Image (tube, rainbow over all chains, first blue to last red; front, side, top):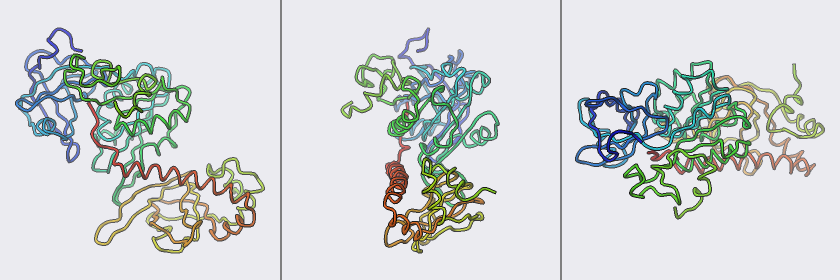
Length: 277
Length: 154
C-alpha cells in the first residue's frame, strides 16, 4: 500500500495519453497533479476513480522501472470501466494505490521463468515481463505464452511483435478462433505448453487470466512436475476498499485486496475448488 | 535418408510403441508434403487418411456460405490430424489447410483399420493413443466454447 497519504483518499491525476488496444480495451497514461507517481511492484493494482461514476480496481500495466506516467489497461465491462475508457487526454481521474501483493519475479532468479496470460490478463503480467527483461541475464529461459479470443483481441500487439523478434525470450501467441489470414496458432493457451521449453523442476510460473484458464494451466503445469509453491496466480474478487477493511473481496480466510491479488497456488488452490466462495 | 519406421518411432504420437508394431503399421504410411494453401482434406470428402505432422502447420477450418472460413484449431509439428478414418461413415467433418509448407507421414485409413482388426492388441494400443488426443481436443474445444477470456482483474 502507498505510504504517507490516507489510503482512502484518491490523488488527483490527469490523462496524458490514451491508446485503444482492442474494441473494448484502452490503455491510459496518467500523470499526477502535483507530486510524484509512487513506485509500484509488478502485479499491484490501483483504485481508479471516474469522478461522479465510481471506483474500480485496475492493475498497473506499465514498467515498474519507469513509473511515470502511471499506466493502466482497462477493459470496458461496466459503468465505471466504461467511463474510464471514455476518458480522453486532459480528463481528471482519481487514483488510490498501489495496493496488494506482487509477482515474485526475483524468485525466478537463476531459474526459467514462464509467464502465461489470457485475455486482458496480459496487462497485470506486463510489468513482470518488463522486470525480467530489464534483468534478463539473471534468469534462465524466459517464456511468455499468451492466449486471446481472436487476433483483434490481442493486447499490446506492437510490443508482442517486438518481443517475438528477440532472441533471448520465447513468446508464443494463440487465439480461440481466427480468419484465414491469421498465420499464428489457434487453440487454447494450454496447447502452447507442449512447445514451450522450460525446466519443470527449476522454473517459476506466473499465471494471469480468467480463473478457469489459470486452473487449466496450473493443472497442466502440475502434471508436468512444476510444484504448487512455484506457480503464482492473480485472483480477481470484488475489491472495494483495497485495504482489507470492508471484506467484500473475501475468499475464505483471504482478503484478496490485502493478501493478494498475487498468490502462490499452494496457498489458494483448495479455495479455488470451493464453489460457494 | 531416414526410413518410415524410424520417422514413426521419433514421432511423439507413437512414443513407446514396440518395434514390431511400428514395422507393421509403417506398411500403411507414406511420406508427403503439402504446399502452403493446399487442402489436405475438405468437409464431406472420403476420410481415408490419417496424418502425423513432422513439420509445418495446418489450419482446421469451418466454412459457411457468404463468409470467410473460421480457423478453430491449428496443429503442427509432433501432432496428429484427422480421426474420421476410424469411424463410419468415414467422412471428413472439417477442412484442413496447410498454412505453410508441411511435411507429414500419411497413413491409409483402410489399411490401418484392417491391421487393427487383424491384431486387436495393436488396435487397442492405437485406439488408446487416438482417444488420448481426442480427449485433449474435446477438452480444449469445450474451453473455447466457454469463451474463457472474459473479464479478469483487478
